[in-house]
Amino acid sequence: MKAIKNINKKPTVLKVDKNLDNYLNKGLFKEKIDKANEVLKSIGLPKFSK
Image (cartoon, rainbow, N blue to C red; front, side):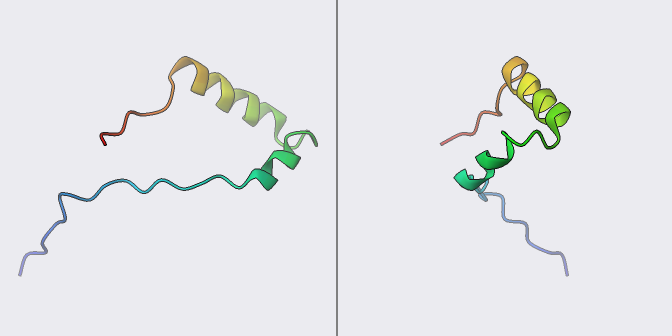
């Protein structure tokens, strides 16, 4: 039998834990954080239909 795909499935939006901001000041993975921020500024977030 064929599996039925759920076509009407909407993407799940998760909330970001604010405790993660503590790691920004510690300098962990600074290069990766800078690169991610640069990509977000240049490309932006994907558009989701409501």
